[in-house]
Length: 93
Image 1 (cartoon, rainbow, N blue to C red):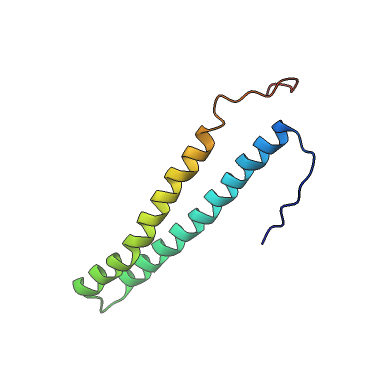
Image 2 (cartoon, one colour):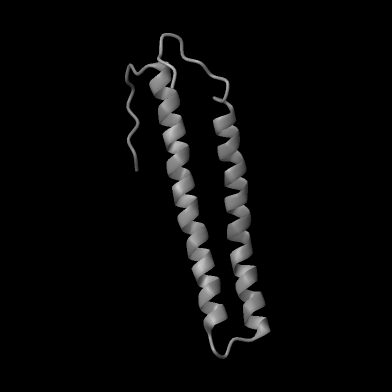
């Protein structure tokens, strides 16, 4: 677990840190979705797979994909908070 300690960071650095944390969360979510996709691919590649098994696999993957979609919405809202944010006395990028 990351350790968050108090410090005297600038507003600009705090915003950068938040944006970087969103990027890390996005990377983690992409790994989760990739794993779910690999699960489906393995099931489809099975020689004796039945439509029922494929439906069960789909049902097992669906809640995870829904959860990831909800988290994506939260992450977008988090980024939107800083969309029009400006930091005085900081160089523009």
